[in-house]
Image (tube, rainbow, N blue to C red; front, side, top):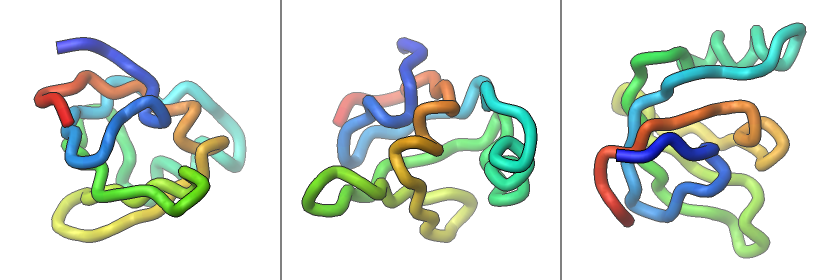
Length: 80
């Protein structure tokens, strides 16, 4: 298991959020979406130009732009 940036994850790859490394309004918004340390996520897919990325989180689907995903560190649990 490796810790990587959420942006670097591949389709179908899963992991557990280890840290959200941004504060202020963006950090608050990311945390309000449920992306907090300990949350399990799976990459569902990406748009044609790789931005945004679609995630499976707590039974729902969420999309993040790459500049938001850059602030989230994930410990991977399976390879995509």
